[in-house]
Image 1 (cartoon, rainbow, N blue to C red):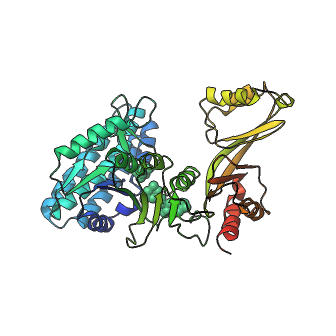
Image 2: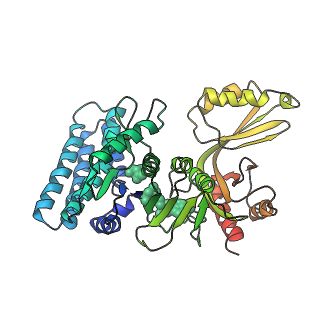
Image 3: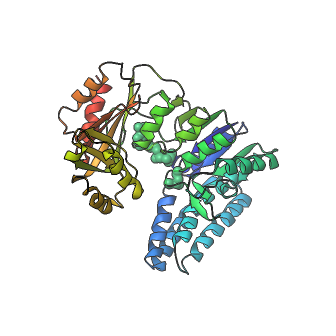
Length: 437
Ligand code: ADP
Ligand code: ASP
Ligand code: MG
């Protein structure tokens, strides 16, 4: 059995849903769907109005969104019977959302509202498949996808509940389920963070030991640089799990950062495919490395660099521990680290506790903060005994001021910290130098 995940654009209109239906019928797989594109953003807008105690503003967005869905229903279904069923499904969800405009609005309600996008899309697809004569079964993610007290997925629970559901519906031709949404350790409706449908797919893949996890999106696989920023990017056909994880973590939007780990731990290949061009080979992510090749570049924004300079670090033991402990105390993960004999620079992407961190660090040295930075990450088979790749990367950056360089943490990446304003220049320079000459 395979897991196939289709993102928002892939199910973004009636036509797209019909195209997806053609791709998924025929094999008994589990299909994970995102909300139709734009829906989750509209839901965010709705609760924004509700937090601001403006129910009229919220109702306006709700009505507009509902109208859009009525249009999709007209286009998607052929028969009056199914149009009616779909309308009942969509109406019940919008009526439910409207109930939240009448009462106190908290984080608890916010998560319920956010969950409605995937409930809409999966319900509609399931009805469409049934109209086409496919015996598809809807697996409610809220019945099996769960996180624990640390907000991490609970693989034992997921495996047990999901497999029980599959056994109970063994007669199905096909299973449809919601990406992104889950329940937390307290049984409340929650989610796996924006873009988290990819994570749902890999968690399901691990839970059922699937043959393959397919992530279907609007581009022909992972490109060697961000196609939204850089010209002349090209698809990368093969990546190692570690390479893909680095790219996803360091900003390649095509994959959610957490989605590689469950696949890697269970050695399940992940294939990225293009819904608009289903025959294109896409990208295969597996345990195999292509020797000696630089594969791709990605960038992560909103980074803050913090430097602590101290004479006390010279020949001292325990200095780094004290520094790192401060970040730990404020539950702020560190991304990059570089050290010299008299100082250490680190980067963080969460500034929530920055003032307290800086205050505490001042006990140990002089502290400087650089805001609005971007980590540019070069990924590939970068084993230290492969000569030359450091020189190519550094020479590509000869016109760009670089604040930090980090290499040696893994065999798969070199990270460079630049000003956000130089991101495009840095990405373009790396592309021209590493891939296009
Ligand atoms: P989905 O809605 O299917 O989850 P996303 O929008 O999350 O799709 O991801 C696909 C988009 O990721 C592409 O349209 C592309 O603009 C963007 N993207 C960013 N970096 C890369 C990359 N390195 N390779 C391919 N796509 C990328
Ligand atoms: N619908 C959610 C979002 O827009 C989850 C996803 O698409 O992966 O973030
Ligand atoms: Mg996505």
